[in-house]
Length: 213
Image (cartoon, rainbow, N blue to C red; front, side, top):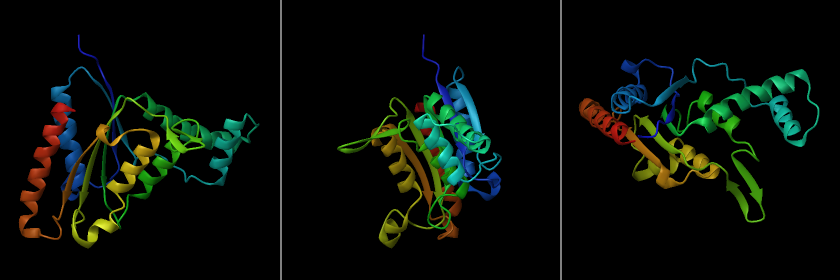
């Protein structure tokens, strides 16, 4: 009997698929994953439809006081509970699929806020004398990213703070590079004449990864 996985699909782009390549990758991956893994439990999280308060001083204090066992104000507890709710959902997943664009050389603010919720000492990583050590193991991650320009070579490499940032965050949590797979579509805005071909190849890659993920 095969093991049934709990899979968290995170959509970090609020545009419709016809205007977003990363959402197109998301829908392609989701469709193919469902057909090839019919027994798995799938949860979809659209960060653009969630209420994601900023990771501000009040939330920070709430999480710090929680860890220290100190009393919290009602607002501190409310905000800490929001962050912990998303963290618990993330930790409960066996597999995580995230679709996100490169916007202004980085990731959307909603996705950044979400990652801040997850980045908690004592829960996703711990400090040691040798430096921080990740506490999250046994997860597979698929990153589905789209960027209109070229960032895989040339001067764009040093500017790419989207996939690079997300990989670094997950490595920090203890999810190794071997557990992270990515489909990246790039250059469709820089080269409009080849845009459809570029996107089609990306969809094929997403479909293939979904079936074996």
